[in-house]
Amino acid sequence: MSQIKRKTYDCIVIGLGGMGSASIYQVAKRGSSVLGLEQFDIPNNRGSSHGINRIIRLAYYEDPSYVPLLIRAYQLWTEIEQKIGDKLLFKTGSIDAGPEDSEVFKSSLRSCEIHNIDHEVLSANQLNKRFSGYQLPDGHFGLLQRDGGFLLSEKSISAFVDVAQSYGAEIHKHEPVLGWETRNGEVEVTTEYGTYNSKSLIISAGAWISKMVPSFQKIISVERQVLGWFKPSRPDIFAPENFPVFNLLVDEGRYYGFPIYGIPGFKIGKYHHLGEEIVPEQLENKIKKRDEQVLLDAVKKYFPDALGPALALKTCMFTNTPDEHFILDTLPGQPNIMIVAGFSGHGFKFCSVVGEIAADMVLKGQTNYNIDLLRLTRFKF
Image (cartoon, rainbow, N blue to C red; front, side, top):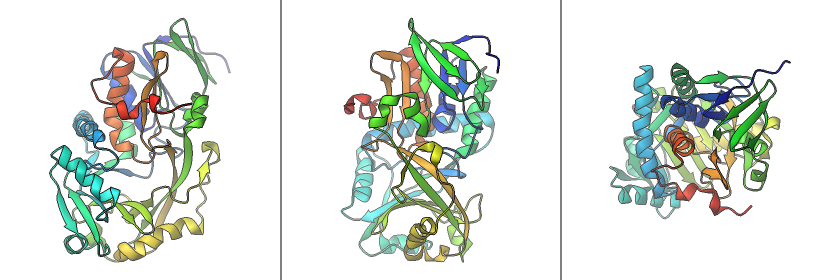
């Protein structure tokens, strides 16, 4: 195929999934010229953001320093909704539940207390009575936070990219990146179809991040994940107005789930599913009996009114760091190369603010947000 004539941009974004689409939107919104390169469709079912929706929750057990980022993320989700004139974020309330001394419950509570977030603590009995789709065991406690809910993930990606284009962003789908290098302070990106030059680069390649930055093979692992939708015997109690999204630690592991939306079933997944480390090109989409059983084990015990036929089972990928915190930082000695990676199964809710941070870093050289927890310097590689 003939080479495309070279063109220089203010920024190039590699990978237009959740984070990349938000990043290109933020760069384009500021009037900078930007090219987005995506190897698949936009959106697609080859990465980490498909399957209709993703949880958003303001109570955050993973670390209280995420909460200010979440507060800004909510504001920016509202902004993009206003620009497209449609809803992306649905508030159902969120429940973070587990044994009273578990990190999931204790640290979610701590994050609310530190940041003065409105919340309510419910015993298992109180929670089960209020939300009858739940049947949590004695000794468990749930933190209910009313601002929690879910985002329409694929629709959000389309929204960011469509609005970015309205600001002048150039989008190339089905154009895999072969490599990149810095030359005289600029970035040169080579694809199957051409070579492009830019003042800065945002790498948001998801599960393919180690292809773009080979040294990340030492700190990034990719994991196969399975999501299931099961037909409830009582659909009304799993409707969005009656069933908060959840993050639940039980004997079988840590699960997350959603009310009925899109597919007419209760949606559930298990964090780190079967612990299968993979390379992204070899993701096994075929569903195995054990894939379904690991989800049914939790449905049967804790959501028994949802124990109906499986309506859909879908695979996706987690891109994990060793500590399961994100990577938001520029490469050492290369302040114009921004890395947006390693979201470890809990990142999508942050897309809107991560895009703003990435644009800040490549266009202004800094961000006002505290991202110390997410810097590359915490790793030795």
